[in-house]
Length: 142
Image 1 (tube, rainbow, N blue to C red):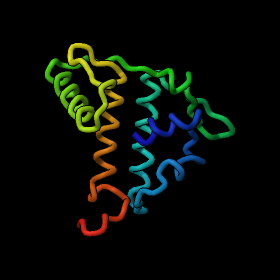
Image 2 (image 1 turned 30 degrees about the horizontal axis):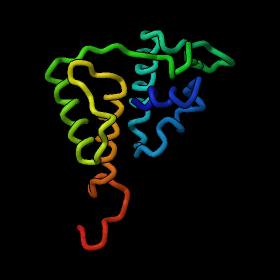
Image 3 (image 1 turned 90 degrees about the vertical axis):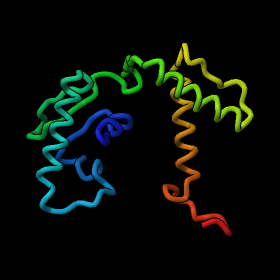
């Protein structure tokens, strides 16, 4: 996931120069470094196999580059009718709570916009959950 997110913001990755930036913020132990490097290399290989990136050696460093813009990398998925119904119930329920009549979704025709709305609902709930939020608890609520 970290590499996928990396390529959303960068067009290339070099293990020798970008490893620390990629893993920034993670607690690391010395004995885990080899395993981390192996995991990164495996993930890069998977992205290469998906034809998302290509690699080349430049001045003794292997560099991986996006083959096309990240925003053009699309996926096609199939959703069961049960999943579509669940998405619509959550999105439409949230729309009712906030008084939004324009973003309701049809379970027979889920769109990327509906998935984005579902992500917004999840993000909203995470931001307003005191256990996952970085915000200090409101006065009198703990």
